[in-house]
Length: 74
Image 1 (tube, rainbow, N blue to C red):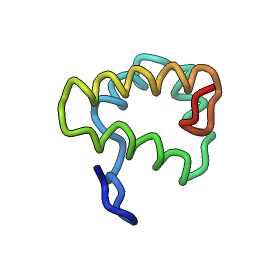
Image 2 (cartoon, helix red, strand yellow):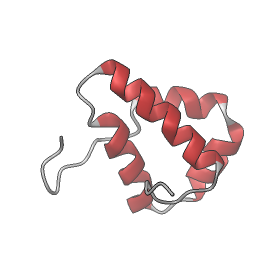
Image 3 (cartoon, one colour):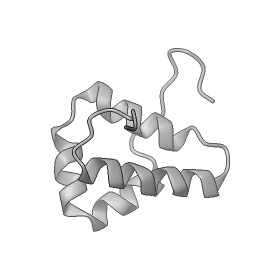
């Protein structure tokens, strides 16, 4: 877990790999504000285990396809 004020640098490789394969998700991600992008990157990249990062990246792609700006689920 990240400490308050800490952020992941750049886009985690697990998320970037999936974004490269999904134009719709990538296009929406590109429209997000810097803080929204950081939220996605921090959520995916802060997981300690590779399996969790992969799982979160997959969920992030689904949320981006649904044009979700935030990580809040309905």
